[in-house]
Length: 481
Ligand code: ADP
Image (cartoon, rainbow, N blue to C red; front, side, top):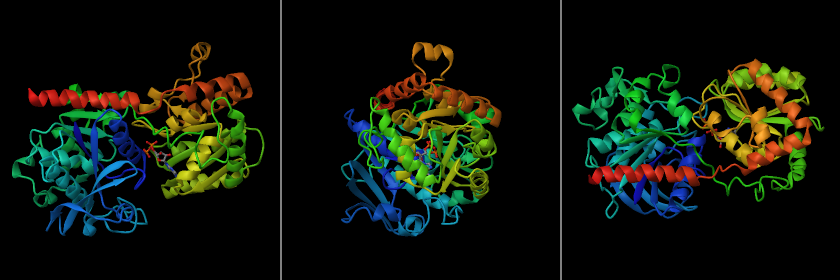
């Protein structure tokens, strides 16, 4: 079976969040199941500079305002199809916006181009390659399924994965004429969305199957509170909707071999984490003592509950814990967290920025990681926490609710607890979880049991990859039938 995956990010070449980790890990997991997965991605500068030899397998004299070509390359075990379209992707800044964080005004054009190429490839545009299944990730790739449906690949089974429903790719109706889709596509069951064009909506409408990244989020998005305007459509398609929890790359995230750690360790040598903790204290300007450090590795946004965290910082310090915060995003939230660090010198440390290596060190040195998200489709940092014995404190929502077992009395007695959950997502509930965590930390046997239980949890891709394979197989049988 050959699957074409289309995504706007892929680890290790370009990453702003969990989408990249998943897009990078799934092909590897699929290879383990005997399934070929090629990934179509945009040729951003960081992607183009990763390969020297170019071999075009597809060329466009004109693609959304300029010349373009697709190159087949293999990098770190990934079979990539890179869309080289300099007028769309060769620019400084991030994948979606400039250095000041402003979205590119032509994002509609950039990701329509990616999707159009995805649709063409699905229809056999690359000689000798005809994917059996097309799998699109998030709004940036979602229109692939519309191009497939209204083009040559109308009979190719398609899967749309929602990593975050908050980002939808909504544009005015005026762009429709430039998308190269037939007029009939501008309809309620096509790309039309509240009078404009909706990219994710179009993908959800066209997809043979829809997946999202946890069973709880799959339930939540049927409600107006989490559905972000798409709950009606999602409810309508609920027979085709599946919640599959993400796995993580257990080779990249392995405390026994991780090069970003000062000291490697296993579940049996947890004492060796101490050297990593000292390194965290140094890097974040924290006092050196035995009190637990709670880390945060996050985009600094409202979704991630970073305002709740900033206002709870004083209470967390009063409860006897310290905070090491790594993140970037909303300038107001950065300011609020930096102000908390200034007020609690030695107890709260903040590093503003994106630092992959430091994110590993935090997981390998801190006692706990807190994730106070208002909604969280899956969340990956709690899974890294489990793997690293960095006990997760999580809001009870989406994938956080599905992956962490709260250390209540029953779970402790059964020896299955892996972390702490709290609800609702507010400062009081968060502080209550912190005080439970600090109390558990004082009892070495209890603490070690929670850490070791987490490290035993299966966070690999194996089971989840199997679920995707089942969906692919089911769709293929529908096609034949
Ligand atoms: P989302 O995709 O919504 O941002 P996830 O938890 O699914 O949230 O994935 C976030 C990914 O980005 C994780 O791999 C996490 O370690 C990483 N990450 C987030 N912020 C930073 C940062 N400031 N520095 C390094 N890695 C980060």
